[in-house]
Length: 418
Image (tube, rainbow, N blue to C red):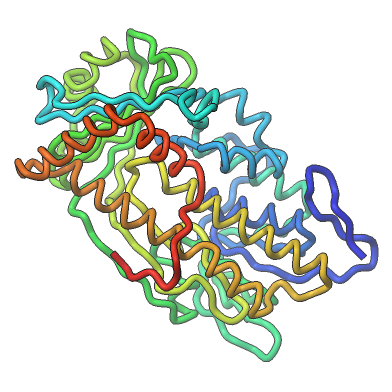
């Protein structure tokens, strides 16, 4: 027998057999999946190709933050890690979208989306990814999850009633495998699930910085030729930054001295937040859209970037991944409550059907928006500007767009790739 524990999380009674689940990938999505499935009643082993930090180790130095929307916060709260994270986060009460013909020019359109317009105090919170990973790791250890680092996956072999994961430190048998091992997922390839990739030729620079004027808990996203320039509130007079440029320009900026980079940054930031102060570490990563053709195979599912990689425009990436986790954990918990195996075809198909339309729709929207934002082609720029002006002029349409950011998209299946 099993029963629901604290916060609606499932706990196993003594003597019950816990299904063995392997989660591959220790990014935020993989850690959240491992913790959610352990709380649902599974015996979880987490594998990662990189060494895992020791208990109590400080979070890795990382320039990236992530804007978590309310559905993601609700999941992390159920998992017991949100309260501590919330104390170090900043609320996102409004999103300001500005269309610029080029840096320093007068805006062609300027629209603010306020959470109060749809009855919310805030859209979500901006948190540091390193801190999020650290809290999830600590919680998984406390839950009794087995952690195996420095164990790159070499193959996945199908046996009669298990999958055998061959990795750099040995082998592991699991009744269910959750692939959360990134865009180039070795598990996905071993399962022979194909994925479509769309290189964009652009890179994102991630950092955070202090500034002279308060941000007022408003995220400012500048739509400009080359890519978006997005400043998201952090506690105090600080903001995180995702700065998208064509690859050659991004590499030039990343290679600048601290003085040179500060000059380039301040030229773009000063009209909005004043003088730039301390700048954190800079990280750069190429923007490549990817979408798996399927989300499930016998005894296996894909979550996070193993299933989809989205443009940073609109803060949909990790929020979409955490939606994967929430759906999978709920389906697995229901199956265990009914005494059914969580790797049954019914559970895996239900997961794929529940997530596929939402993922594909968000992929199409974010890829299209990112391309439109980066374009300096006059007709595209005009359409972008008129679109923002239309949103500003039609409050009902604005509210519909805001609600779409917060909840899954329901579209009929099958939905063709964009």
